[in-house]
Image 1 (cartoon, rainbow, N blue to C red):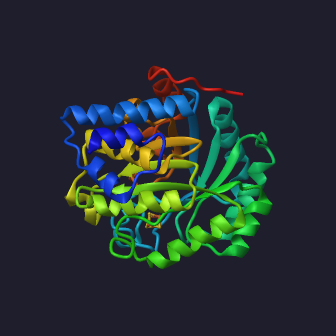
Image 2: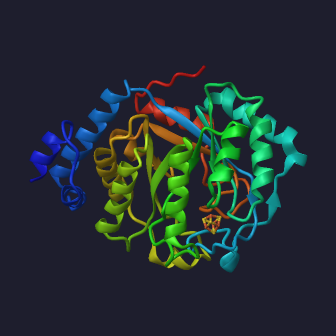
Length: 324
Ligand code: SF4
C-alpha cells in the first residue's frame, strides 16, 4: 500500500515490487504529492538543504560508431551542425573554460567525449586540467567503455570518478553489448573511481520494470550521486518519433529513484526540469560544448544551462549553495 511504503521508506530499503507500485501512481492524484513530499523532505534533511552544480564540457562532436538511436552524434544519423575535436593543442582554451566554470560555482567537473575519441589524448587533457583545479573539485570522465588499465591511468591523471550507465534499450537502441557496459561498471567500482549513475534515456515506451532494473543496479553499486534523464526527441534521430515523457512523469520517476537508491551525496534530473526541485533533486548540470541531446556544437547557447542559470534555479527553490 502506497501510504505504508512512504511511511517506512526512511527506515528500510524498498523492494522492486514497491518501486513499481510507486511508479504506478497517477500523476494527478493526491498520492503523487505524498510521494514528492517525502522525496523532498528526505533530500533536504539528508543533505542539509545544500545543493550542488556539476559542469560538463563536451570535448568533441564527431560521428560515433556506437549508433545510439537517440543521439545527435550517432554515425548512422549525425544531425549536429558541424564537427569539432578539442585536443591538447586546445589546452589553454580548455583551461580557461574549466577555470571559468569552477570560479562560477562548479563542484564536480565532467569531461565528455564520444566513444571513439582517443583515450590517451583524453587522459592527457584531464591531467593538464587537474593541475589548475582546486583539490576539492572532483574530476569525472564520461567516455566509452574501458578496462582496468585505463581506469588506473584515469586515476593516476587525477580523475576521481566516471559517469557510466547501462542505458535503457542498450543493445537494441545502441550498437553496444549490454555486457560490455556492465564490465566497465565493475571496473569503475573495482578501481576505486566513484561511479555516477543515471536511469536514462527514459522514453514513453520504457516499462516501469525496465526503469526499476536500473534503479536496483545503482543501489547494488552503492552510487552516491544519482540521476534520471528523459530522452530528448532530437529531430532526425530514429527514436524522436516516439516523443517525450512529461515533466510530471519525470518528476515522479525521479522521486521514486531517489527513494529506491538513497544516494548519499546528491540527486539530479536531466535535462534541467524545475518541477523536480521540489521532489528530491538537489543537483543540476551546467553544460558546455557538444552533447547527444542537442544539434549545435555549443549547447550552452541552446538546450544547455550555464553555471549561473543553474545556481539561480537552485536558489529559487530555496537551496543553499556553498561556493568556495
Ligand atoms: S550516446 Fe555516446 S556512445 Fe551513443 S552514439 Fe552518442 S556519443 Fe556515441
